Amino acid sequence: MDPIESALQSSRKCAVPADLHDSIMHRVREAAAGAPPQPNVAPSVWKSPVSLFAALVVVAALCVTLIRTGEHASAPTSAGFAVEPGVTIAQQAAEVLVGPLARELDHANRDLENAVQFLLASVP
Image 1: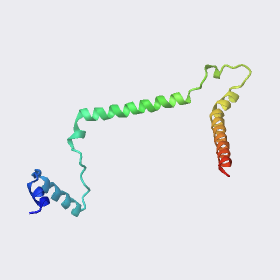
Image 2 (image 1 turned 90 degrees about the vertical axis):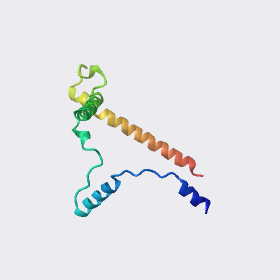
Image 3 (image 1 turned 180 degrees about the vertical axis):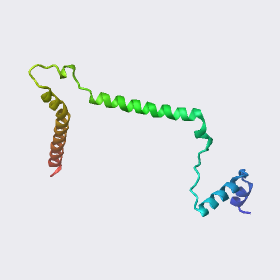
Image 4 (image 1 turned 60 degrees about the vertical axis):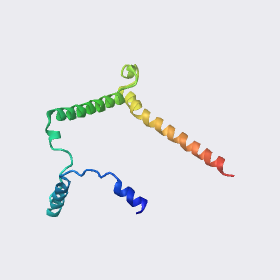
């Protein structure tokens, strides 16, 4: 006898669950009948009040985090935003709204200039 065959025959047999055949055949019959497949999650998971409460807490924490992040991003950077004398609120608002876009444009221009410098330096 071949050593591989003897190793395979002497290998430990794993136990097959008793209801494996029934569950496979049940899925095959459902698929043949055109029924939508059942989810693999146990149905009792979402019926538990503890799991529903945990899911609601996670969703609430996510919403609070997103709201706070939005508040910090939209808050003005200085407290003197609306109290500068001699400047109208419309001018200040325009500076606050256009300022980030102008900075991004400056960054993009700097990156473009650096890329051009790199390409010119790499050409022999």
